Image (cartoon, rainbow, N blue to C red; front, side, top):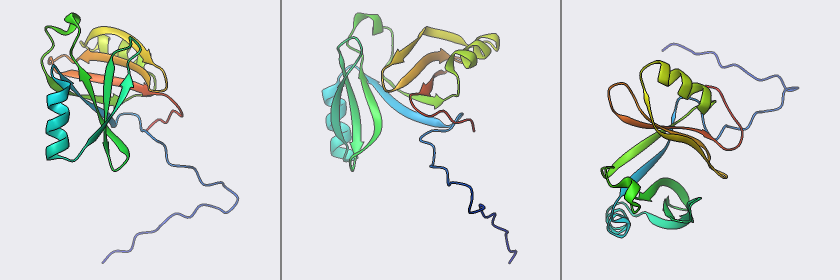
Length: 149
């Protein structure tokens, strides 16, 4: 069995707190649904999630799925006519260090911005993209401490 060396931090250096997010890692998942009540009931009955309501910047409902008191996913009701062509689906969001700079690179690489980049107070700055193959992906620079991975 091989031994691995472990690095020790000198006592004079303060220990860093773990970052709440990391550039390039999946950060959040969101269900987009036309029937939030049906979806909440399904995940409540099958997974054991509870839900907390959060208002969107426009005043609509957004549901945060909770497991043992910890947020685990979101649920966005596709209630407005502007979402008529959007299929029900799960959407994943990657954490990125600078959403505006990363979107510029994505557009140069053939991605398409689905809607203008926007801010959600206390959540972060968010971009919705279609990568060159057509798959949807969200990118976000979460509010709070930024970490590059």
